[in-house]
Length: 70
Image (cartoon, rainbow, N blue to C red; front, side, top):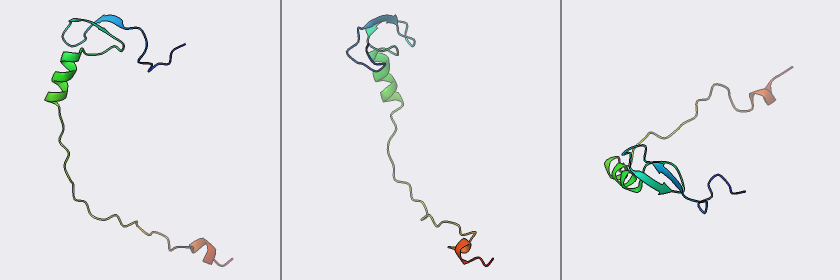
């Protein structure tokens, strides 16, 4: 039995959910033309974001449990 993400599975014939064209592909989803168009339309560009260095908040002093007098 083939796995769920087995790309060697038999192609399916279906209608593209975006442009309604008849498509034959291994996985259900937008056709190749629609995927290309979506990638170019929603292409995100990476950027560097400057953030302050993380300093953990100290609510309890280190080893407070070990120093506790009973």
